[in-house]
Length: 315
Ligand code: AVJ
Image (cartoon, rainbow, N blue to C red):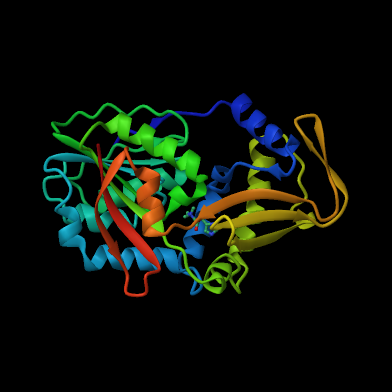
């Protein structure tokens, strides 16, 4: 199994971090949650009682797997965006007997390679082409040495919600252009619901989400030359009803300065750093979001209308 790595340059990531911290309000790149530790914490989040998206999406997939996989092309390549630990994909793979190759794409290389190896061990016949890449930027497909007819993508977890609607639209436009007309996209989209359910999902009682949020600072300390003191920040997340999004922030507990590659960034007590948006959609809003890029061919939802899985076809 050959792993292709499309690395982000140190200078690019450093300026992304510093530019974000020079903005008012300050912000940090959401994708930097996912170092090895962050990917593990996210897996723990998925097991929490309060965090309904993962198990709900998995149940929707499980309950409808025959019908869902009938939308995929025969002898196709299946590409997964943000594959993480690749749990959901096993269901799809098991029901796609003519699958030519599986391409998991993730920013966290150790996690990606380990998951791909486990998957390969359980499915020795499967052709796996892992790609370590920041898929929010341009990325090139690895060379696939198999005969295949179609490329379909899988974008689970409602990770699309991390983009603002405008950025989500341009991202999907790029995906549709990359894979071409008639390519499919099976996407998980979290739905709008009561604020109390959403607030609880991002403020779990075990504090794992808080740990996940704070770990972003550890990751940045390791990634670039920074000296964040994680103990001097606290987790803050809430559902912003006006914008239909979860907002996660880190709040500075005191006035402090942080050095990042020689630059000094000042924080006031109570000042917030935005670390993540997680937009929630109505079915109608999402259809509008993809209008002209994808046709929504089919939508599956759970009994409590918490989450949707949708098959989109590029127009
Ligand atoms: C993986 C981006 C879908 O937005 O719910 C979980 C990440 N953040 N808890 C989400 C997350 C806080 C998750 N996504």
